[in-house]
Image (cartoon, rainbow, N blue to C red):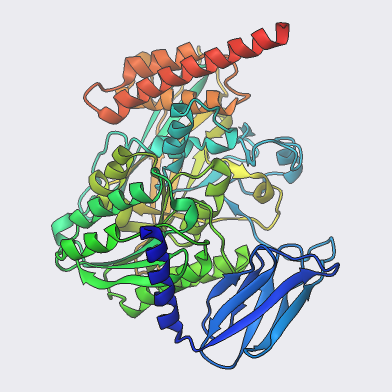
Length: 589
């Protein structure tokens, strides 16, 4: 009864927002007369999105006697009709030609300039590969000494992987993004010098899974902001309350997360809440951060129900953010969804344009995923990238606490945007290099127009970038080099169009793995863990026992995240070993 009442109230909100006086009715069918369900209908006068029902029919409230409706359905031609409220309209959609002429520019996570596309095609076999991500291969430094990397603080992959393992399910290789797994731990933070945004350190050591190779770590530390001196924030909570959110690990978990976030707000901060589900509406207009009871009461009142008109929700959230924009402040939308995300009218390219245009206006977008399967997170990740924000996956209460309480400023306060790094190796010392993680999608890698787009870095962040290197010298060679590796870090400041850079040169200074700082030994165990889950062709000799050994030896017992990682590796070892035995048993029967 409570859910029905909530949906009714949401419908009243929707009607009040658009001043409903009339009703537009009709049906949508294909050329053969078959009803088409879930056709997207965009109402021109309001900008809202509706969908056809099981029989292809629809009924839409309107504030005037006639209105223009656009009908969009994947694989069919778009149609536009002027509809009158006193007439029942029958729409027929025609199939599109089999060849599409839409051109979209792919987005890359890493890029080696001028690398022969034919060489890259050897890394994968067209689109037939199981994973949409293509693992980076070794690149000859004599031909291509420099590679570029887009940096961000996304960390969704680790908690998503953890969810699969806790459910005793095999982790899809495409769910494993090693750079995000490393981001989860915020290794060994070293503050940058005064008046500096970034500090860069490097470490060179031997590679545990290939004795002939080396591991090269680059650590990037961002400036830590003082919470008391931070500018005021206007946060728009954009919350998916559609029917698919009606599960314990979805809307109830998000409500707990937003309760915790509200506890961090100050009097000078403001919060708005926009919902999309059975209707799209504003559940809480801008409210001061010290009115926590009012904010929490609005959060508690959220109940799931209805479809998922995400495009309308995003438009309304940006409208609220722009209307109450704080000059020089932290203006951010926090989108929370299970990934069952229907963008309504917008194609992916149009949605890119919508989010990107607001990004230029200084409005950031943070995305929180819950309950989604791996293949639903790509669109949300794209939104976070285009919205100059970050993406986290909330699989339990502890992760919500970590992201929104313990790492509050890292998640919600930006110190630099459009951040990317060029790394150059000395070909006389490095024969080949392989960037670990930062894998590109198949479609982007095969797209000659694809571009590298920098990411957002939050306050007090510690990023670890790793390379596997094949040396160009033997163990008996005495090496002296002041330019073993060169890094060029490029970034922009919030509200500043100028591009800044930090250039560093690092000498050849290897450290034996056994003498390595524990944080890098632990980072190595995370890399090994991700590599085994991905079935990487470069780490075929790593066993689950190897991963568990390195994790156990290097994990800091006083750090709960590191100690829980060791437990996760043990669970994975147990599950995958049992699965392997069962497969062998079944094959012999």
